[in-house]
Length: 402
Image 1 (cartoon, rainbow, N blue to C red):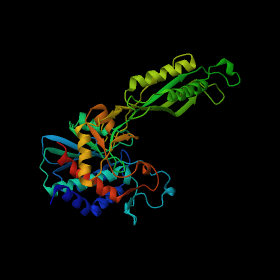
Image 2: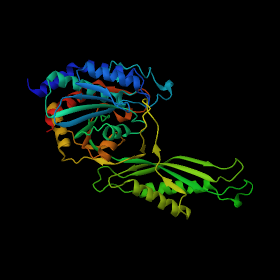
Image 3: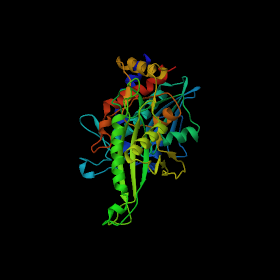
């Protein structure tokens, strides 16, 4: 039987298996930084699927391996989730991991992004069943803390564990579409100073609240002025004030300190230096003076292994050219399986690719089961048919990519 048909038949054969693997992961809570029990279960699932190796790295991510070829291809899924939120908005237990009558897997993380992780395990099982012995060592990374700080897990894998693949496929939810780039992002903190005075004599002070208000309106103007990338692939960047805080000596005083927190999305050609300079320039124009301090904070939380590893809150823009062999091979693999072309587009949300492609320039594409519209919402689901499709695609790609 032709290889393509074998892979299609096996992915269909393991339809229920893949859905059940997803259900098992959903039923073990794994909030960001608290993934230990879920990671232990994933190691066991990889071993049961016949992986050549499965272990937990120094930060807490699970790393699986199949094959021993000279080149390295990696599939990545973050296996942490956001919190449940208001549980009364869920129709069922968020951790039920149940397959519904209309072919959906229900539960927190089913789309974001345990579905991709389940397909990785099922595709690895298929490759072992086919006796894969090709050009690639295939790495499967089930990564932690992405919801808290996307890419931190991969900076650790590359810089501390020395795992640097030649190609990476992110299995974030794309509804089985192919993405080859995304806007970057960064977080910016602005500190403003005023002069306090008694609230009955506000003219004796300088209000940091009024400065903050003018600074916020300056960010609104900056957002309007930002321009799209040259080829209009990723679109324009954006900036929004996500938090404001004002304080002074008392409730009866003119406030003397203010803080604004910005979410800045970066298109191709923009970086942290450009973004901070724009903020300083626009606020200076609005206030008639430079802000007291504008800087990029650091992420310093520790995960379940209590490993000391931090990064600045900067997540670079990335893209892989449409003519790149990884993009071409991904399209070819899908065409072989389903006689349909995947025209690659941009990803609208942020992923671990900010680290492995944005910082380390490893060619990357994204293709995974589920919908981004289902993510971070009550009653999250993913389609079982998406699981079958992506399982076959992940198994097929190592044979097509050369």
